[in-house]
Image 1: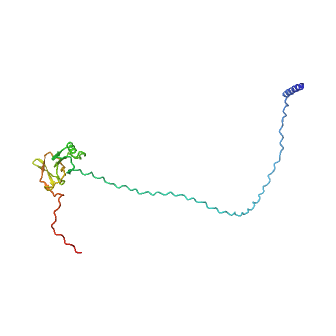
Image 2 (image 1 turned 90 degrees about the horizontal axis):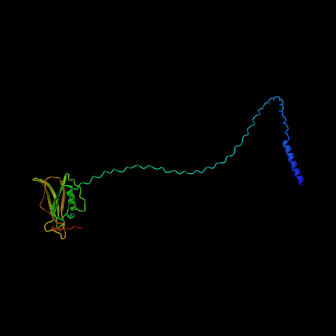
Length: 239
């Protein structure tokens, strides 16, 4: 068995070697075929056939097209321009008038009688701090003005007051006239104390200032009852 197998293998090897060394046959030339002449053939005449008659077609019944639903388009409100109203022009308020006099009888811290003459800002600030300690002194133009004042001291009734009634020039001096107003003699109030004063701004002067107390003016007391009337009573009105 082994011998046959070996012999088969050897035979196969020999056959393979022979096929590998076998010469290939020479290619045979292939000649192209000779074309056969063909006689020209005349084209056959083309006959025009009549067009077939058109057959009228029945129109197809058209179906009614339902209308498309219309969607309402929201219309935006058109803004109406408002008329432009300019604010009224308010004229500026005029400055408050400058105060030229201060009077009273129960709102001063100066309790003693006396007179004052103020000619500059330093004296004015110092005086006002004594007269009204809790206030700032008012503005006064001392380049053209000066301040004079009269304090009467303690008085026993509200009816007392004092007024500077005039300023005049006399014998090379500037005279300040003032009057004390008082209730009739004997009129007084228990436990009442007032301190009348009058402070006034006057034109500036380099003359010496004198204070002239004029005759006191007596006024009816507001605390006295009016006298009973002696006039006859009016007659009754008939009904």
